[in-house]
Structures are given as structure tokens and as C-alpha cells.
Image 1 (cartoon, rainbow over the protein chains, first blue to last red):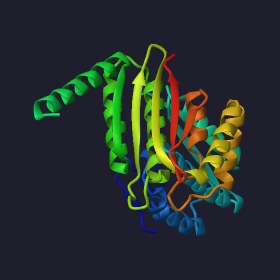
Image 2 (cartoon, chains in turn orange, blue):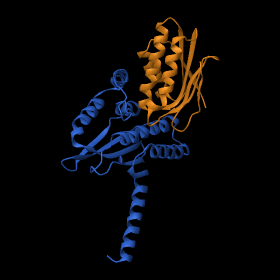
Image 3 (cartoon, each protein chain N blue to C red):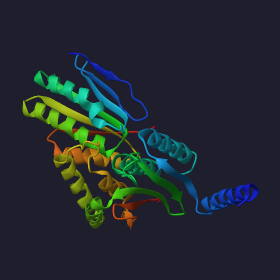
Image 4 (spheres, each protein chain N blue to C red):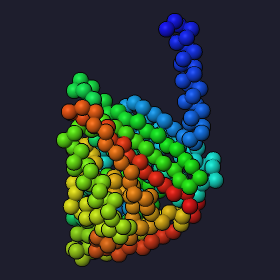
Length: 126
Length: 189
């Protein structure tokens, strides 16, 4: 499968989706003006990945900040992984948050309330 | 008025404005078109100037967060005064006092949207932390990203992150449009 490797900017995140080395990560900032345009290739990639996923997928979210439109898309991503779980594969979401950022931890907990995927919370410092 | 007096008048105005910005501890004032570029510029300016202060990371992050939502609200939803204009304009003001930061934004909106907007704001203000979280989750699940790229989550997010009620006011300008002012308050402690 082709890999996605997008370098982050002021308003878009770093995205690595690499099935061969089992690396899945979205990190940095996400506040693009047009979230649909930015995330469309990512959602398509996940759809394709869902057809033959790894035995176990560890997906890392390490976001510093995301706007509300991105929060909706992140849920869409998680819902796709929920389906992968329903099809009998292992998925773990590693939700990274800065130890000072309670809001970011809470955001992760809210997603964990909605989707049936195990979440691990990982605190980091500067 | 002759040229000299006019210049003097402008200088007085500039000085008065400078003084009143100082007295009221206003960090930023802007009136004009609000685009993604403007949003990025202002948030990064504010971020850099906050980084030089003693403000906690949490407060800095909340100010950044609320500014993004407020500015993107304008760039997505503002209407124009006349049909000829199609810029999304607004005013933006950031100020701070002993206890809090205030982010005030204002923009023109069509009168026909006022009722729904008021209802939204009233609903958000009626909820506690748990209620806001539930509404946010529900709206994320059931909502769709609109054509303009909004998710209908902005006000809920601001209320959730600030822990303060949203301040708002509508001033009817004519039969067509009103001016909508939104005040978000971030406590410093």
C-alpha cells in the first residue's frame, strides 16, 4: 500500500500512514480552513487500509491543537477504525497530550466515550 | 476644516486611541476582512506575545483556541452590509485585565439568522460542563461539516474550554442585517 507522509504546517498536521512499517500518526496542529479537502486523502487511505489491515494497529494522535471542524473529522477517522475492530482486528489509539493540557486529555476521553476502541493516554512534557 | 486642523484631528484621534488601548489593556484591535491568513497571523502574534508573559500554558492555549474559533466563525459565517460586498469582515479585539482575557468579535449577520443564533447561544449558556460535553459529543456524531466547512461546534467548544458563559449582543442595523457581538472570557487563574 502506498504510504502517506505529509509534513505539518502552521495550520495542518503531520500525517504518517505507513502500513509496511506499521506507523500511523497524526501530530501537530490542525486548523485548516477547509478540513474536508485536507482530510479527504487520509480518509480514503484508511478505507483502503480497512480492506486488509494489520493484525494490530497502533494509531498515535499527538495533537497540540485542533479546531472544532477537525474534531469532527477525527471522529470520522476513529469510526473507520471502529469498523476495523468490529471486523475482528486489534486497534489501539494512543492519545498523547501535554501534561498541562487537561482539555486535550478530555478531548481524548470524549472520543473514547463515543467509539468502541481501547484508548491509551500518554502524557508528555516539553 | 483646513488641512492642518485635519492632520491635528487625526493625531489627536491616534493618541486618544493609543491611550485608551493602554488604559484598557487592549492587546489587539482589528477591523477588516477575516480570512484564514488573518486568522493565522493574529493567532500566531498573540501566541508569541503571550509566550513572553508569565501566563500559564493552559491559559495561553485557551486564548489561542478561542481566537481560532471566533475568527473562523467570522470567516465562515459573517454576512455583508450590502449585496455588492462579499468580503467576510469583522472586528476583533483582545484585551486582558487582572482576572481574565476577553476576546470580543463582531460581525454583520442577516436578521433572518438572529433567532436561531440566539437559541444556540442560550442553549449553550444553559448547560454545565457535563451538559456541554454531552452536547459536543452528540453534535460531532450527528452533525455534518457544512459547505462552509463548519461543524456547528464553535460556541460549545468556547463555552467548554473557557468555563464561562458566552456574552452576546445583537444590534439591528436595518431591515436586512444586524451586528452580532460575541464576548468570550478566559479566566487567568
